[in-house]
Image 1 (tube, chains in turn red, yellow):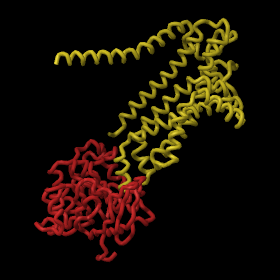
Image 2: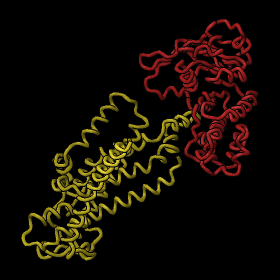
Image 3: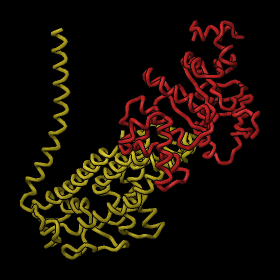
Length: 254
Length: 287
């Protein structure tokens, strides 16, 4: 793909659960190797947006989607192999979900479900992902113990390792830091800065300061509509285009 | 403050008393039965055949018959019930079909066993031409236990947090991969418990098998392990108990009670095994 096709191009995306529309036709792009932060109050459609991108929205029985989402120019709603699509996207949930498996199996789950069987193939993937998630040194001696026995911050890094295990091109994080302490959050933020060289990152966050620290650009989503999307210099300046952005960033509302 | 404490104590006392009251009937039933059954009880009683026109001897044909009926009926209803529940809970959307099946399951679970018996008679004995046989009786019992197995399996599956499934889907796993790797391993103890609890129901029911394949008496060798063919009628403990208690004159007094103790004992044994299995599987559970 040529460099000027955006990594993700969303056009007129609408999402309704039954009769209630929660995303009202939004259009934006995510550029290659950028970190795009999505900020906005609860119920503004941030999580739903991520679920549309990796099509786990298909599992929500009453959801209706219209508009297009293109990854590298390919419409995600028309891909034949939706499981392969999901493997191109890493997804990290707000609360760390250690699958009730060992640390090793948590990370090996995706490689295995895509068909790898031999330990010699899987071992390097597990080590690489745990290293990338800055967890390797803490767990390398107990890969066989349960993922759920780790602390909250470690579990969240484990879910990041799991999200990296299928070598995604895009990493989506959904408020990854709400259940973990500030120190661990800083460590993961460092990890994300590293990962950005290899992939494109969409960071949904409640913390405007986190968006400010990490992102190249920030999108302010409110009640299913984009209030403003621009570079951090503009969004976090004293005069963004929309006064609501300034008020939200300053903590006057939201 | 003091008054509150007194009220608290009184409430606690009442609740504890009610809980204890639960134990009283159970203990008295068992004690009463064992007391009256004592003269006949023993290994010999289980493996011997009825003698002197069923007024003496043992219960082997009925014991084996019940074993057959329970094993066969669960061999049919457990796989169907568990697979149906997996479909309903993991695959089906919440649409009219799912609701219809749900309604059917709930209502089927509430149908009295005598109605199941009549259905079994019409469907298996006559329509399917299986005749009065172990096959007909087992299938009737299977139909009876099926809805409860579906309901208990669904409950076990639903207790696995949704977040686990979503985490699997997010890494590109199919529904089946998700079910096999995460959902089933974490619900298997609940599923098995639900299935095993149906053993006692299948073993205790009299009406369904009386209509479809159980007989008063059938000559069987003492301790013979495979006395019946699928197309034959058989004796069963629940039916035998009814026969001894009401139909046969001059039965040795301890005989029906001993039969009841064996029936109850077998059921309790199976339930105890279920609890042990559940504890063991819980230990394997990883969250």
